[in-house]
Length: 235
Image (cartoon, rainbow, N blue to C red; front, top):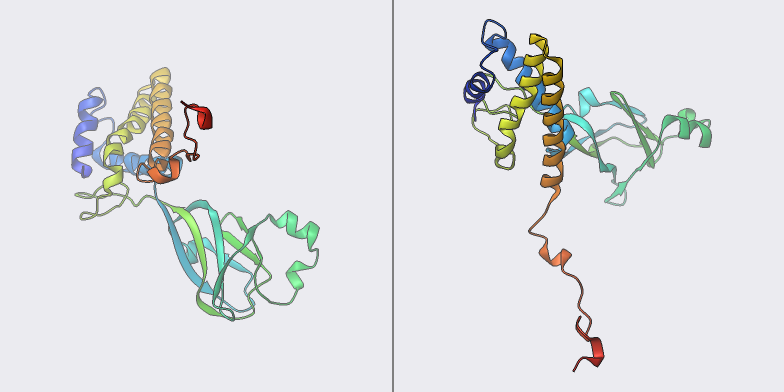
């Protein structure tokens, strides 16, 4: 559904909150927030981003280098060792851990990065790279939803790209709109109920999106040469 279809359903599902209470423009803001929150909770948009390694640079701003970043994936940050033409996964640590284990890490010589820490808008690597390399880092992360405007689809923020795997969840955004609408109207209990429903649907979507029915071979129970009913003594 494009934005106009979603708005039409919202007006239908919450008729007591018309455009004199929440204007179309404000409804768009609410739905874009809903899409952001749904994508964040459901981890619906896994991706990876390449960015340049800069010699002797220890900190990299996500807002500059990984502009679609929402939160990290378990695969984390990788470094391309150009000398050996290999990708190496860096170990995720905290700044506190680096301070405790390498008290002088900030002043140590550049080398091949082994550790990284993500703090707010900043990725810190240790050691700092000893050479500059185009696309020398690769961060696996979940990306943000792109805001809609008129004629655009949710999540992709495009008038031509509609994520097919998220089609079934577009209507769920209305629960977040209902939460804000009921809150504005002063119906606290109904607002909380709508928020809980929205959150539960997003978490359910996370579970559904992780399912891989195509991986049937990975889920088949290994069979022994004696079978599973009676083993070697079966008649």
